[in-house]
Image 1: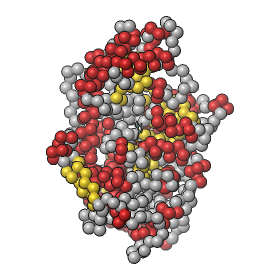
Image 2: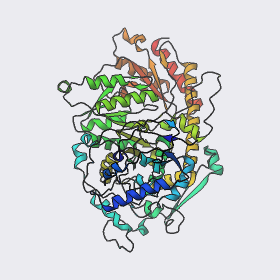
Image 3: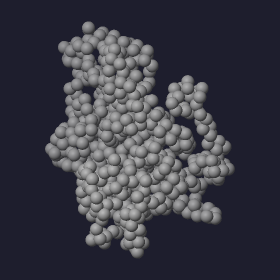
Length: 630
Ligand SMILES: Cc1ncc(COP(=O)(O)O)c(C=O)c1O
């Protein structure tokens, strides 16, 4: 169906075509390029486009400047960028937050209409790649997501500026001189005596072969029997058999990661989240824990408070504390953090009483929260986002469990819900991320391969506005330098060369079904064994954790005057003595200023088999019965 999207429009300033590397002044090039771009759009009805009404008026043309110059036309392949040569950070002019798009499906015939491209879909990736410049392949070759984002991204408004949220440390960082020098390595005929890069002949690995599943045979047995061996040689690029090889992967690289894998995660991000502003970027990371550590450095000062869920991933809190950062816990319910609770904390913040300024970083795990297993609904996320806008908060969404969203729980003999029948259905079934509703560019999304491919790979990626990614990049350059080359190469071989986006989604659907079965085993075992008079739970909708609340006030220790902590410890140790390890809820409290009224234990269904899960829950039930005298 052909339709026209009419949206609120306040001039070309609102459409971002700015490159991360834009020049500081308006040149005749700007003007020519813009006219070419405009005429091209009007004349060229690309097969991948649909008509859209974008008001084009000569009166707005003078507003074109180098900060919104189209560096990649929506309909022409992007121009390869130079590396990331910021010597210092150049703030952009402050802009009002872009409004959400008003979408009206109305037929309009209007000669000022220009085509707007189709959203990037799994089956559109190869066609789009053919139109783009080749992926950079040299040693430490520079790249950024703008090389890989599809034309539709550039029809959206730009992110707001958040320089006022950067820490002194972040503001002080300069580009790495040595990483910047790598840009010259691509110059034809250049003999490098510049950097301390070892010669590849001294990398004692000639090739790597990895055996991986061939879709749809994802089980370990199918992989053993009919898996595919992926070969990575040292000189595959020279030999024309790949765009990434050991010669490159074993050397130093750029902080944002190797271009071929960066391209894959950029496309994946666009397909799944389609961020609503134009100047978003991805950067590969050495995992989410490390990215979170960097986020604290980028946004916080010693003595600051951050907002966290009342119960949270213990390592995330433990990363913050030694940096002199304290946490304030936001009350939670079965859908995770409560926006009204967050608003209340922020609205009543007393600087003198707290001895600290109002917090402006929220760390949240919106899907399959660790430890509670809670998943925020779309409406809940919208409400949290509004509170973040009201108080000008940066949202760090840590989402390692996003793709562990499971099928609805069916108890007893009810038949399980069948898997999504295709990729579109699968993508539609996912709760929208904060990134996907981030009209301001205030979200930093932490992605990780840890829970969906392998934690030992130590590779993940972040998505945020160009301005924020640029500050992260400056930090990565002089800390992690780049994520492990061997890991990036293995992931690239598997995800990009072997599975492609379609195969990766098949793998994720397969994981979803496996986790659903595991979750069901655990919840069924709880229904079968646990004494409901003192314990209750909700079946988790995502993640790997099952959160159980104990009615600790019924514990006989209360009469003997025992404290919450003492009773929690007794229950924990009694379970260990029975031969089962569960985690104590108090381990996950980042803010001990509020006395614990409730008591929880966490069990995971990620690691043990169905039989072992049943046995473990039966042992836990035995220990609870003994503890409570049931
Ligand atoms: C919420 C959360 N974030 C991050 C991580 C770790 O991610 P990564 O392995 O990418 O550092 C975990 C691991 O348990 C987690 O639960």
